[in-house]
Length: 250
Image 1 (tube, rainbow, N blue to C red):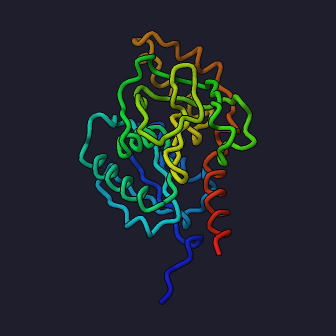
Image 2: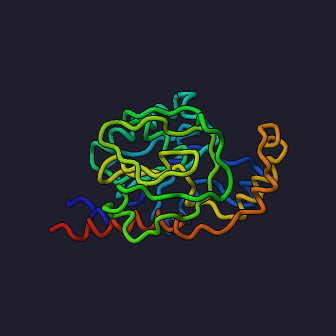
């Protein structure tokens, strides 16, 4: 029996955590947010809750893999996270297209030989400017994007060191590694393509007192939230490029 065509295989979503229950009930869980942002129908995605102990199939079972954000910290080296990192290392070696977001961005760094830690420049929150770096000019994912574009940021840890061969494609005011190409088929973003201003507003409101203790004005940040269409389109763009590349093969 012939193996299924790559274009008919599902996209894996490695679900690495969720917002608190109040935000989840209002806005959905992180896996569903990522699925919607990627333009995937439910039957086209295989969501695996690795943070709850579920395990993905072999990389060959998927046409691509996406990795969600999480309230967890990569530097805690939770067993489920280390198992997911090992799977990602295997998948990257196998040539599986992968896109990670926030925690997924940092988990890829950990899996592929980079380093992760708390951002020495501080926490990034709200709608902030992302600036494309010179390397983005020749990258297929970044082709035609504006030099700067807004994105939703919500992170305390960051990628502090890239491994050999990885290329930073975009930065922000506090983070030199906002968008990284780890290999021709593996990308990740520290910012959140899947978050809209509504979710960000409710998050900032819910944690306003916590952020105030860090010297961050959540109310001011909430007042400057805005839509981020360029960032929001990156997951669909990524999957579209992978689909086109598969279709172009003889």
